[in-house]
Amino acid sequence: MYSDAACFFTRIENYNPDHVACLRMAISENFQISCSRLSKRFVNRGETLTAFEDISFQVRSGEFVCVLGPSGCGKTTLLRTIAGLETHTDGELVVKTSRADGNPDIGMVFQEQALFPWMTVYDNLAFVLGNNPDFLQAEIPSIVNEFLVKVGLEKFARYYPHQLSGGMKQRVSIARGFATRPEILLMDEPFVFLDFQTRLRLHELLLSLWQSFQKTVVFVTHDIEEAVLLAGRVIVMTARPGKIKKTIDINLDRPRDIFAIRHKKLFLGYIQTITELLKEEMQSLEIE
Ligand SMILES: Nc1ncnc2c1ncn2[C@@H]1O[C@H](COP(=O)(O)OP(=O)(O)OP(=O)(O)O)[C@@H](O)[C@H]1O
Ligand SMILES: [Mg+2]
Image (cartoon, rainbow, N blue to C red; front, top):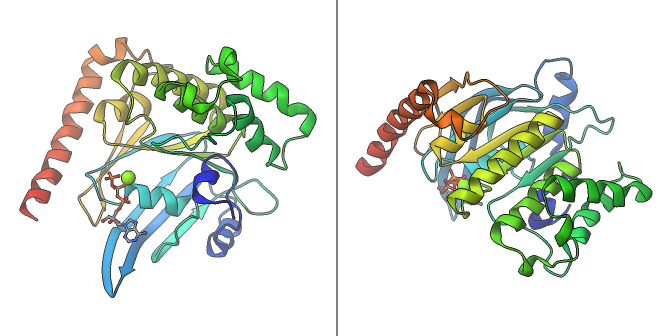
């Protein structure tokens, strides 16, 4: 098993055997991820804490789903559970894979870039590809160069992470997420620490990569605009223990112009609807 920090972008080894059994059962279904009445409880020194409860949703292959919810409602735990890094307590989780070994290929991008500080940008990308048995050593340089161009970092291939800006580091993380060609990309507030303009650029980049590669993406955020901008569907969660409050289809055309879209009535309507839903949850947090 890779350490937590290192499995951001690579296949999760030793995928939970319960999940693998589910995979085989559900291989013909038309979805990539299915959570059915999923719950997760943590027990700490005899105290039980329910992170999320009774979560049911499916994500189709190639879909872009955003998950929004108040702090502490279990979003990160849910992503970690889908990634096989946590075991759910109740319910059923099915993660479909086309891989013969039953281990789904899942890439992860988190809010803090887990780049190896002692490796250059080039080596950070080459390393994860080299560790993935799906890639031949001979093809790695061309894949790394292709993705450096895609994220606009070809001139920075020989730079170390400390020589990059936050946005550049996050571009390396995104490149790494897509370059390994995972079936599923899980993203946990990847742009939260970036300034507004850098976020906009990364939204554009992410959408264009997603459009090209049609990966299944589950993207957690606190930012309502970000969710509506990116997603085909937004799942709004309640305050902890997180349940699904509402799922909203985002019927905005693709490809999306992230500047023009902000002025659309439909876009503003979604923002308003989701803001109202989250306001209710914030109020319930205050009462708590
Ligand atoms: N390993 C753990 N052991 C015990 N409790 C945990 C563990 N991981 C998370 N929790 C608890 O589960 C709850 C949900 O945490 P989680 O990090 O999933 O929330 P979140 O929705 O991602 O929050 P945020 O929006 O602030 O990132 C929290 O109350 C947290 O304390
Ligand atoms: Mg979180």
